[in-house]
Image 1 (cartoon, protein in one colour):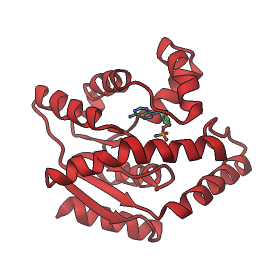
Image 2 (tube, protein in one colour; image 1 turned 90 degrees about the vertical axis):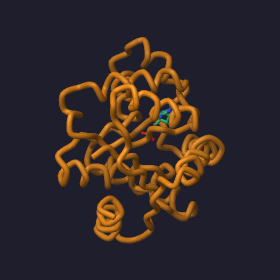
Image 3 (cartoon, protein in one colour; image 1 turned 30 degrees about the vertical axis):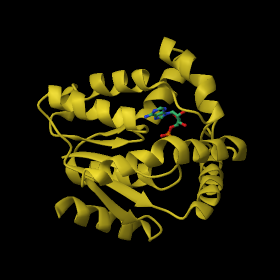
Length: 193
Ligand code: AMP
């Protein structure tokens, strides 16, 4: 099962990806998580990405495409993977198609979580409160200013990715406003259908 989860920041991609990991026994590949690890480890990619991420902009396409190209060659991706936060530009979507074709693979499903933009800032604030309550580290880009920039970046650069897959007849949409379990059920239904 090779799956892409699309949706704006705060749509619930990470939450749903974690559930799909359980169900299908395939890894969640979050470019955001991989980049945050690179930032924490102060690798050359991390040093390049840190300020870009904090500003809410996108890391260059070639950087994330390179990361994903390498990552899906790992043994744990043999039976598939869930892409969370990638592709985020049409160029990334096209590169993904090409690199999968080169490996003799293709996507099985592209699922977009449709969420009312008005709830996204509240969801981010809730995530921050829960993270703090759990005594964990809050993401540097989970503050009102960065979050609004991330939403703007999403509108300008990532929303066209949905259109890209829609035009190819590959996009499946799920109501991301429903309760978490209902969203999970709807995703599973779309994947099976
Ligand atoms: P996320 O955890 O998916 O919200 O990603 C956090 C930040 O990492 C984004 O705001 C971007 O700066 C960067 N990032 C993550 N994935 C990508 C991607 N596919 N392309 C470019 N930048 C990305």
